[in-house]
Structures are given as structure tokens and as C-alpha cells.
Image 1: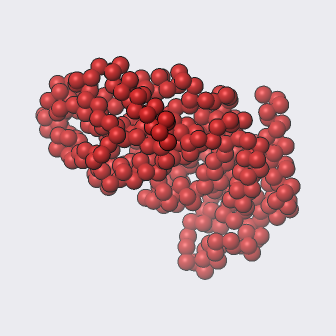
Image 2: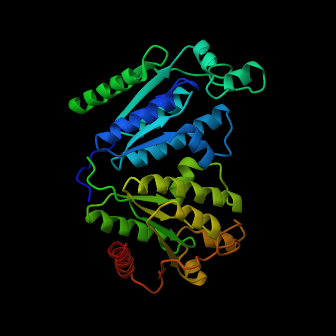
Image 3: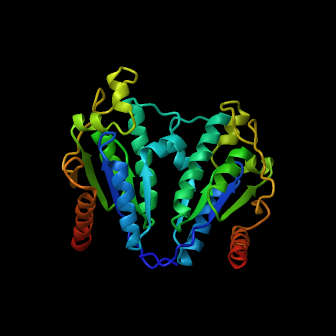
Length: 179
Length: 179
């Protein structure tokens, strides 16, 4: 029996590949779960694999991917589940629309300078792009539209993970006490 | 704070267009909600419209649609939400796989003879198929693979809605007391 009909929160992490979205998502999920709430991570890569294998990386396909994530997130949040989205979601208008599907939403830009990302190159994508083996890498040769008025910007090259998490949690608590 | 970590139930209604899946889904959702649980209906038509506008009605596309519904349902059920799926889901193997993604699943065949469906023709689809205006209508000129060992068969031309609901509820209660 559910005791609580409050919708879940949507915490939407947007930013370039390798900026640290997934790392933050996993750590934040653990912290939130420790407070007793239900949390689900919607990871762009996983969603692509399971329900979007036909989608490529054109603007249209990227927008459809974001649309799907926003829809799935809204089904979860309206049932009281906190959702952490980790997805590049490069286009502002589709991202805004997807985020607006949930009523308690936070948009967080996870950011680091391109040189740092190229240096880290967690998935080897930047190297491939530089060598011309792939094209359409967001932030390198494909557009990324930074959020206007996002709730928080996390500079992953300047903040330690622990500090980023504390910042996000403080922000979330601020909302709770002000709604 | 969540009091209960039990997964939600997946009640998957499969059957031909016009058999009564959506009607049962809506009424069942109300009954379950009245017991205090969270319930979400995943309706095949709505899912198509929002996240699958590119899909047609080939076997491959129908299977992908069922795959998506199964995935979304699993995210909800593992967070304690009861999910009622209302989707033709004509192919056995993709349907079985989608249903198996959730741990407490019920497969319910909602059924009526084709002549009854043609007579009802709720959405006008059978008339269109008969006049040759559309092709690929499940059960008319496109395959429907009935479930093997489904948990319940609801003959919508023989059972009153109230009785169908009672039957489904009894079945669900039976599971709860036996797990």
C-alpha cells in the first residue's frame, strides 16, 4: 500500500560524452536510495540498446531518443519514483519538452572543457573522432545546446564527486522545503 | 518514504483489436487503485503515438513495440507500480520475453470470435479491412498467436465486464496468497 502520493523527482543530467553524467547518476542514486526513496536511473546508452536500436545520431533521431526517455521518466515520476536521467540530450527544445513532462524536474548540466574530455576519453570516442573514424560526436563535430536556466551546473573537472553530490542534494532539499 | 519493496504486478492483456482490452484495463485500474496501490496502464496505441511513431505493423515492428512496452513495464513494476498492459502483442515469443521482464506477471487473453469483433468494429478497422482499405489487421489478414498457458482467458462476448474484473481480481489475489 502506498502511503504517499507525491510525485517523484526528475533529475536530468545533460552534457557531453565523458563529462561524468553516469558516474554522478550512479552515486546520486545510491545516496537517494539510502534515504528510503525509490530511484531509477535512465541511462541513454541502455535505452538506446533496449528500445531504440533503430535510432542513429541525426538530430531527428537524437530528439526521438530524448522524447522516449522523457516519456518513460514521466511514467515513473508520476508513480512516486525518483528518476535520474543520464543522457547527452544535445538539443534544447526536445530536452525542455522531455523534462517538462515531469512535474518536479531538475536540469543539471554536467560539464568539462572539451580538452579535458579528449584527455579523459573514457569510451575512446574522442580519439576515434580525431582520427576520423567516426563523425557526429556531440561537442566535437555535432551540436550541443547548453541549457538556458538549468538548475545547476556541475563542472566535473573542478568539483570532486562528493562535492558535486552534496551540491545536488542540497539543491533537491531546497526544492522540497520550498514547494 | 517507501514502506514496501515488493515489486508491482504486470497484468498483460493480449488479444485482437476490439476484444475489450482497453475497457478491461481502465476498469481494472480503477478497482486496483481503490485498494491503495499505484497502477499505470500502458496502452499499445498510446505508446505507439508517443515513442514509436516510426513503427509500422510488420512482424519486426510489432515485436519491437512489444519489446518497448515490456521494458517500460519492468521499470515500473520493479519500483512497486502495478502495470496493466493493453496491447494486441500478436507474436508469442516477443510477448513471452516482454512479460518475463517483470517478476510478478499475469498473461490474460481477452478474446471474442472474429464475427463478434467485426460486428462491434469499435474503431472501424474491420470494416476497412473487409473493404480492402487496409491490410495487416491482426486476426483478419495478419497472424495472432494465442498464448500457450496464459493465466486467464476472458471471453468478452460471454462475460459481463463486472464478472471479468472479479475473475481477474480473484486470480491476482490467488497469486498473492500463494507466493
